[in-house]
Length: 142
Length: 114
Image 1 (tube, helix red, strand yellow):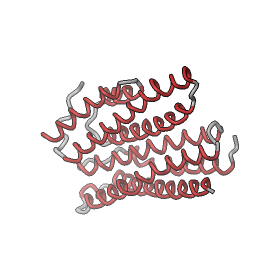
Image 2 (image 1 turned 120 degrees about the horizontal axis):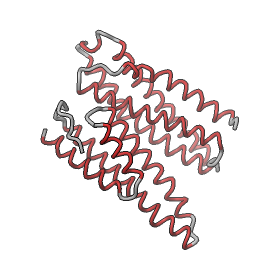
Image 3 (image 1 turned 30 degrees about the vertical axis):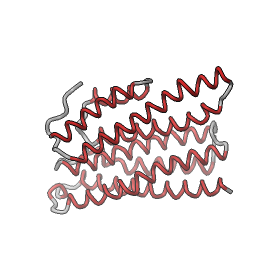
């Protein structure tokens, strides 16, 4: 029973975390692509709103996803399973990407410079990693 | 150690971030010391493997949290590549966290005086 509760909280945390990452990635991509946004009068408000969400929802959700994920793996005896080890590689990569997006938003809040064009590629990376993770968890192919 | 980049604006958020980062760094370093010098000897010399089973995931979580905060801090700008590598490498070595904590304390002091 406790296993199902842990799993439910893990999925809820992951949903909020990944949703927040999309928000941050879309904001960074928009600022990378647009020529008018750097001079837009409400640019700072947009960045601040996204950063606030990142600080109060996305980042805590990521930490909770990790904690509940570790608890689910321990409770279910999944440690050592190859699908889980592979999933962890993608989860660490997603966490790193989240850190980069979060830091980039902080940089944009302080300076008027545009993010690097590479920042615009975060969205497909998130989608790809999420698809692989879901396939690994549901199908457990290895 | 390279000097901080001069174009960084004075910001109390900078100082708070450095101090939070220093806490994460010391927690990471502390759990590594506990794992290597308490839990591992308990497992091998006292036949008590539960110590490693408990400390392993705790240190893993502390290390990932520190790594995530390091990536976020570096992505925000103001850190050279050399400083970044030192802060990362120190997390892998026992007692390395104390060197990083000193660097972060210095940067926090600079952030509050800029």
